[in-house]
Image (cartoon, rainbow, N blue to C red; front, side):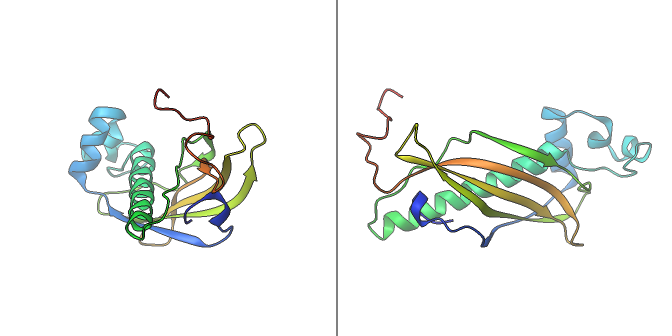
Length: 170
């Protein structure tokens, strides 16, 4: 995924990076955002369906988001260094078919990817397009632990700040 809407190719899988989930991190996230027993302690998790401490699915999705944001930031920085006009991204008009097919356990290393599957121009906002991507997290054993489709507004090259409906007050 590079640059403006017109530049984005359908098909290539983009590696966003990997993340190792630690016990402390899993518990810390769960205490703040998903305080279910199997995310809070190994002892409680032993009594659960999971059998071991595991990360919240929301934690897994948040790591994907952090890596995706880092990817877009790096892309924007590279374009700026080359002296090009930097495209605007987002917001996302939503996701669908979010699943967590397998748990993420302590010390699992998850590799995150994204792949643009569809693009569509917007009549209502001609200076923007929407891409739909398929996103995954795969653990070190090759098992999917996160899957979803996401949508993202991406600026079209022909647009300009004055004409894309965005103002300093927005």
